[in-house]
Every structure is written in C-alpha cells, then in structure tokens.
Length: 124
Image 1 (cartoon, helix red, strand yellow):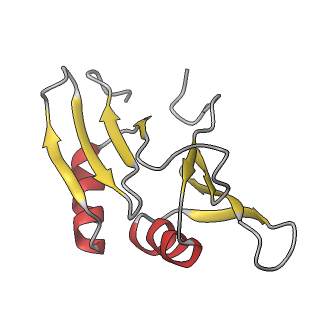
Image 2 (cartoon, helix red, strand yellow):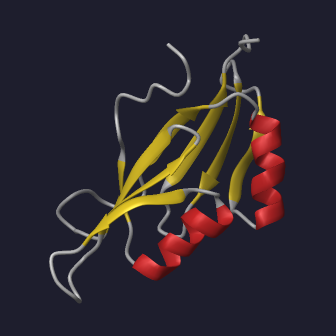
C-alpha cells in the first residue's frame, strides 16, 4: 500500500484551540482541512492534513484524552527531523533505529506524541 493511503484517522485531544492550531500548522507544517464548532464558545473539532496524513484534533472532552501516541509511516525521518527542529518542534526522541526501523517522536503542547517511522526498505 502506498504511504498516502491512510485508512484510519486518529483523534487527538487538545485543550487550547489557538495554541494547538498554531503548533500543528506553523510548527509541524499541517494545513486545516476543515473545522467544526456547533456555536461560538463551544469546543472545536477539526481536521489537519499533511502529505496524505490526516489527524482530527478535538476539544471535546468525551472524545478522547490528551497524551495519546500515534504512528505515521513517512519516507525520510531525518529530513522531517531537521524540518521540525528548525521550526521549533518539541522532539522528544531524536531519530534512531531502536525499534528495528528509523523513527523519531515529537510531542504536541497537550502531551500527544506523534511517532514518525521510516520503512526499513525505502520505495524507489
């Protein structure tokens, strides 16, 4: 399956909409696909995307709890590490081969972790 065929969309709990939106867009390079809010001052539910990867970010406390871990398969962990480091992302685990493949972990302002993994044999 090509890396861009994501079949599951993880939802991550956020507590501060503006802070999380800025982090995912400005620091991690995602773009907003859509946002939903029933009324002003109600919690926001939104979708952010980057290179075929999609994440739901939710302020709704009943959806999930902060502090989740999601894994994404990408083509070049080291290039993403450099980009994220240059943008000021919180890299909580630098690129390594500890799990049998190249991987790194970043953590968002709510403690959610995104683990980026590179296949052991790259597609040419």
